[in-house]
Structures are given as structure tokens and as C-alpha cells.
Image (cartoon, rainbow, N blue to C red):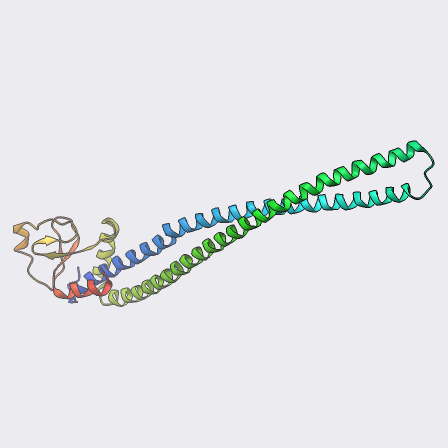
Amino acid sequence: MNEAKFNVVDLVELQLIENAISARLSEIEEAKNNKEQVTAQKEFEKAKENFEMLDKEYAELESSRKKLEDTVGIQNEKIKTNESKLFSGTITSAKELENYQEEIKILKQKNSEMEDRILEIMIEMDDKAEKVKLAREEKDRAAFNVKGISDEISEKIEVLKNIVKGLEKRREDVSSRIPEDYLKRYREIKDRKGGIAVAVLKDNFCNVCNMEIPISAVEEIEDVDKVYSCPLCGRMAVIHRNEIDVIEKELGL
């Protein structure tokens, strides 16, 4: 491998940047599947369904009332027509007279029954109208809640996407400072080791495999400007220095 000198902390920073990118992308996915939003959406759907059911029932009552009123109106006109005939002096048959009188009686009885039903429906409509009003308010509140959560999530996702863009730019800058042969090895190990190619050795421990470095290996690991290989997990490894802690803090890790 080319032994060209470079700041080995750049390798650690590259790894930490990619860790940060993965973390932010996970946050984006988590935000998209926000449980609070899912719950709020279910509550809205339930409130909407309840409102639509009550509103439909109110409309059906209104339709029934209208039909009954129309029928009563038609039958009142027929009663008036029959009564006019009764007093027109044109009916000479007692049987015909009796038939008209009987029909008028039946129509008035039917109208009376329908008017009673209309009154009942109007009382039902008043009660239903209040329920519809409350259901609409509940639906609107639920919709407002969904929108509020959705807007908050969208804003959070946008912020995270911008952070990722910044991290990607920083990754490009850091990568440009690392020799190609080290980058090649980094990528190969990253693919084999679950995305983690670089480890930090501190107090004789590898911070990735969390294992203590054997004494025989520790004696050979002393140059802070050199890239080693962890004898336990095989990852690229550098000796810890305070710069790494600063980078971790900057990246929120």
C-alpha cells in the first residue's frame, strides 16, 4: 500500500460522517413512519366516518320529510278538489257523494298520520343536527391535528435532508484528502464489515469489536499517525486522539 503521509484522523472522520449520514437517513425513515401521525390519521378516519354516517342519516331524514310534505301537499290539493266537487252541485248520485266523502276522509286521515310522522322526523332531525355538528367539529379537530403533525414531520424531514446534504459535501471534502489506495481498502472493508471500516483504539480496546487488544499487538501499536489493522476484527484502526472526540461532538454522535 502507498505509504504517503496524510492525516489518519481523516479516515476516522470519513467513517464518522458516514455513520452520521446513516443515522440521519434512519431518522428520516422513522419520521416518515411516525406512530403519532399514524394514530392521528386513524382517529381522523374514524371521526370522518362517524361524521359521514350521521350526515347521511340526517340527509335521509330530510329526504323522508320532504317526500311526506310533498305527498301531504298533493293530497291536500286532492281534498280541495273533491270538496269543491261536493259543493259544486254537480253530484246527483248519493253513491258518488258517499264515495267523495269517504275519499276525503281517508285522505285527511292519511295526511294527519303523515303530519304526525313529519313532526317526529323534525324532532329526530333536530337531535341529529346537533350530533352532526359535534361530529363535524370532531372531524375538523382531527384533521387539524393530522395537518399539524404532518407539517411538523415535513419540516423535520426537510431539516434532516439539508443536514445529509451538508454531510455528503463534507464527506467529499474529507475523501479528497485521503489517498486512493486507503479509500479503496476502506470501501472493501466497509462492504465486508456491515458498513464500519475504521476503528479507534483507546486504552488498548477496539471501539468497534469492544475487545481488548492482545499485549503482543499493543507493543507494536504506538504511532498515532499510522493506520493499523485491528488484530481482532480486521478493521482499519487508528490510535485515539482528542480530535476524534471533537469530530464526534460536531456530528452529534
